[in-house]
Image (tube, rainbow, N blue to C red):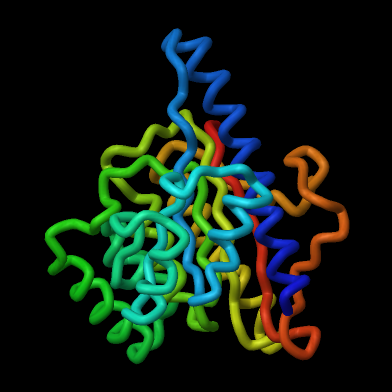
Length: 240
């Protein structure tokens, strides 16, 4: 599992750097300005594996790393690696700007659950990271319930202050191994396509052409505990 997670941390680093270069070119050519250093939002555990990879292998500064976690003890551990204000005791959707809910399942139970989650998020006055421009997102350990993942994606990507000319990298994991994983990925990918259209952008699957983005050809979508406990993939939202 550690090798699998390390592989995808490296994918996060590569895609963030790719987006950073593309944004810098755009900023220089169009605005004649310098693009600020990239900010990365991710979910992490108490070991701070992703934070450590970004700082040690990716050469990111700790202040470029932003994390949300629902467990106070994990937040306390993560604050040993990144600045205190960059770690919030909250869900990803609570930490980020809330976007419009996406209906992807017609079952009453799914609708009710998604509506409850969305209403809870809408009651927030604004997440701690609501006004931060993120170059990349890594939603790891999200579980296997697609509406929960699409709610996080909506919160992150449907923001009034987003620039549709700036590429964004998005990675997410689905737990549960091979069970219904193709259907779950399809549901989430379609949601990302709808989000991209709403923003005037397009969505591409980064692992279809890993060399273009500096990702290793050996990266595996399915791995983790037991060789198939987690499915992880990477997408890019790019200007049309």
